[in-house]
Structure formats: structure tokens, C-alpha cells
Image (cartoon, rainbow, N blue to C red):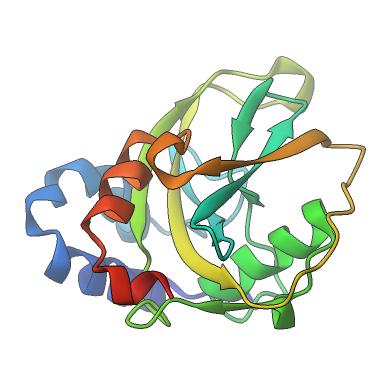
Length: 188
């Protein structure tokens, strides 16, 4: 069973307790949670939940994958699936599927075991081939430290490459800003 609306609301409220100024930005999430539709289902419109894994190596570089569908360098992530027990496990599953890095090779940064580093709402273009109108993703971004070196094995159907970027050069501006706010001890 996918994560429930009550669970997602609690995760968002825990995040907002750290970032109260972002409540209005998350209005698409709260609208989706008030709907009778499953907020994690990829065919829930106009907005639905996705999850990403922000992975830091020991040099505080952030893992990015080159996503074929968008042509962009992004954090590993995607849509929750029915078997995902919660959002953080959805992010870990996506990390493993897209990069081959198993969930036991990473651990959440202290203080981020259940609370995302960032929640970002972004627009997705219509995809007539998939039968999807233009919509929004509400991306719950969980932060992990790679504690066990593991080779990256790409899911070639969706990913064309990868790179490790300094945290100050992370593709997402909100992730860059939130990583910069972390105390140095949290990076270890």
C-alpha cells in the first residue's frame, strides 16, 4: 500500500516546522491531499508526490544522474510505488533502481531520518505519449550520506550518465541552499 495522505501530511508538517515560510509554496500538495485521489499515483492531476535521494559522498559532493526523459542532471528519484512503505523508502528504491547503489550503502544525515531536506513543487510538461496533461510534481527530497563506496550501475532505460558535483553546484537551487545551511557536523 502506498504512503497514506495522513503520513504525507505529517511529513510535510514536520518539514514546515523547519521551513515555515514555505507553506504557501506547498499549497499544491495540500490540495492533492484534500482530494479523494491517491496523492502518490502518477495519474493524479494537477499534482502528485514524487521522491528523490540527495546522496552526499565523503567529499560532500552530490550525486546527479542524467535523466533521458528530461535531458537534465537530477538527483535519483521518481514516483512512489504501491509497495513503498513510506516516502524515504521510495527515494531509496529509486536510488537503487537508477544507480545500483543499495539502500544499505547510505544512511540519512542526522536529523533527517524522517524529515526531508527539501520539498520542491515544479512544473512538468504535458506528455501526450503517456496520456499526461501538464501537471506538478511535489518532490520530497531526502538526504543521505554514502558510507560504503559502491559502483554506480545505471538503469540505462532512463539514465544516460552520472556525475558527482560539489554541494554548492547541486542542480536544484533549493537543495544547494539547504545543504549550505547544514552545520558541518551534519555533513559527516
